[in-house]
Image (cartoon, rainbow, N blue to C red; front, top):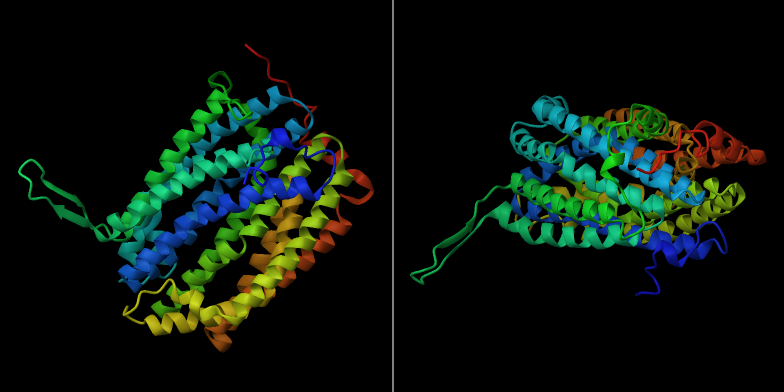
Length: 488
């Protein structure tokens, strides 16, 4: 196990072989993302046992969670890019300052977004078409999530900053502990639990039955513990990257830099989230079993695409550090390797899902629940439509990860908006009206293939040509043109 999970002090992202350090960087991210997905899967599993209405409610709530977090995503992406480029350039003091400022503005942004989410959650979900039986449950879930957004987003920033430095192991370990806590308390808070002891000195021990709200409480509580641990690690600097209170005083000149790099990343993430919510608006015109099947399908995708997401983050870090070290050709080779490997791996996974989708969907539907057979049949159909295009997601994620690492976040955002807004949503809208819910499933397959083709062509014709990416990145967002923080 120690040979697989190595810290940044044991390999160099800017020299030597490419495949091995990319693998060593990405593997802990795969595991971390698997743990992170376990939050959603645990909620989906237990709420599926609780009721199909609760399962439909989480299908409405999850896209809103994604939307709120995506609005602030640019801060974490910008922080990760700056830390990676400074680290690659051998400027640890500047990396620490970037990390400290990122934490400050992440807290401020999450408090603002969480407050807005809490105030307008009911109206937002109603606009999305939540039925009368689903709306109260989805609202109660999102109210808790909104109040705890600072903990959820704060931990995401911790993961991003450590990844930019090159440490993907520490976030993995912290995430593991958080997931264990979440999974243990999830069923108790959802279903309630009471134990009455007969001993005269022992009273009644109980958890109230909170239903879908209990799943939200479990998630926020476990993420808050993870954030506390993450902050302690960064303040102590025991894992390389250190933050300082003296560097956390808001620096308005620095926020402009975060915005310049991070705003396109927020646009990209928000575009993805809006696409999910617009698709949900289309899905909501169908019955609750279709909504529940859509929620299950998107959860399955979140697991399947873990390697793509992880390797894309690894490519982002490798690109950032190699741009900082003035080695763009090495970053380019890493990106092409990642795209090739991901296409092969995810194509095989997609073939497996295509052959046996029903057992996968059945895991998330409680036996004897209302409309269980309809949910399973619809979810099975959804997976079969999309499975054979999984490999193209790997290509798309590898290229957009490289664009972000190089500071070309606007390019990554443009590809995302075109893929999801110009292709996926219109195909779903027209398809749903013409052939019913299969039209929605078809939109995923079409946009997956189209997005990969667009990213590949853009990458070949873009700023990599003639090595100009290094010039553009360093002169615009770069590591030598900004005031250097001074030690106290």
